[in-house]
Amino acid sequence: MFRQWLTLVIIVLVYIPVAIDATVLHVAAPTLSMTLGASGNELLWIIDIYSLVMAGMVLPMGALGDRIGFKRLLMLGGTLFGLASLAAAFSHTASWLIATRVLLAIGAAMIVPATLAGIRATFCEEKHRNMALGVWAAVGSGGAAFGPLIGGILLEHFYWGSVFLINVPIVLVVMGLTARYVPRQAGRRDQPLNLGHAVMLIIAILLLVYSAKTALKGHLSLWLSRLPCLPARCSWDSLSAHSLRHRVR
Image 1 (cartoon, rainbow, N blue to C red):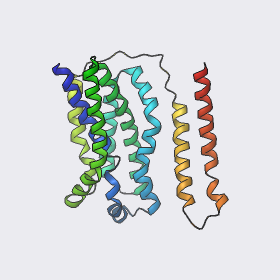
Image 2: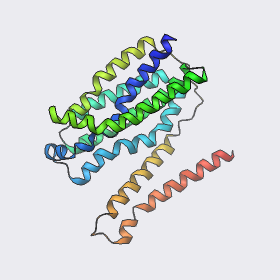
Image 3: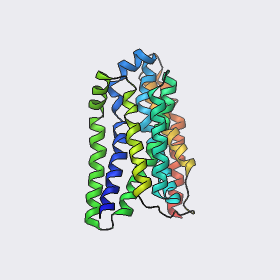
């Protein structure tokens, strides 16, 4: 029983920064604009790219977890998340910060399915599993809700990179506890990753967001603002058709 609840503590600790990073930069736009010289469009991508990439990568990373076990996936995701946080904290350009946010999103996409798989594998009784899932959901929604508040406090008293540096000690603690107490799981090598579908989905999402941002510019004609939507629609239709064929099989 002790190991079960310790695993839940580990899951909560590693999931908190993942949830917070989705919203922590919402109050940092003026600071990033002055410090990095980021334009309005770059600020939007700095804030949005994290959630967009993570949404597209969660499913294939979950399949990867089935292949290698959730402990390995959690270690890989936590390591990437920590390194990307360190790199983001010392960004000197907006482009570099966007790139590091992409890496943060990939690390987060590994952590999210790993935490859910950890709950499923650790808590066999339905009552305890439901309780653990409730804690997981509360941490996710609470972390996202408190992200702007935490970001504002850190920006008020410290360097703007502290919103990322705070992730590093948390990740280090989680990695140590995971290596020490979380048991290793056997993987299923036959599990498909479907990385192509994930890339297609990310491209579709990014193009749709780009279309929306482009359409808001008043100097573009209506047909030009709709043009970027066409590849996104094609990608989405292709993904939907493949999913339907797979379901029929």
